[in-house]
Image (cartoon, rainbow, N blue to C red; front, side):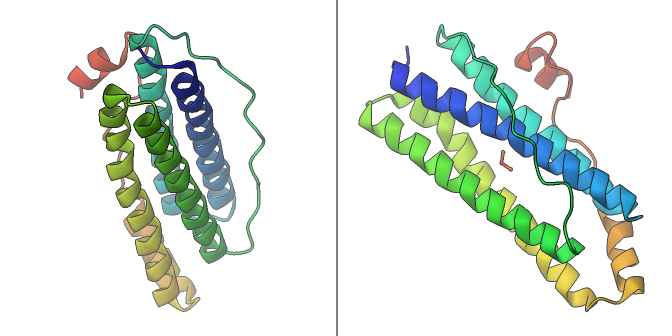
Length: 180
Ligand code: FEO
């Protein structure tokens, strides 16, 4: 059983994960509009990743006897000046998420909540990959040195990313994970 403080903090982070999904969906729409279909694909795959991050928290709360509270999601920005600017925003956002995850872990330690510590550890590891992905794409965009041809090649590469996590949660996460 989680404490109210822990449950509220996880619920808050669940909403932030769904906001992250919104942010990436907005970036995907913007990329599509710029004709960068590969960027749009990569970012829409990221949308699914974020919904999965949120759903894991949703189900964890339920497993602890807490009903998740579905709250308002803020409107994300809709435009960026360049693909580089957009991915710098991705990195900034992911660093913020890492800080929030660390705060969650701090609360789990304060509350001596060992189950939540194990649960949150998954996100600590995940954030290493999230920041690494953003850093990697920033370096690649910088390498294009604003050459449209090089940018289109990178776009082609980003088109290859596919969804590797469950996306249908109607029968619960375990059922979705076993089908993947
Ligand atoms: Fe759910 Fe991108 O962190």
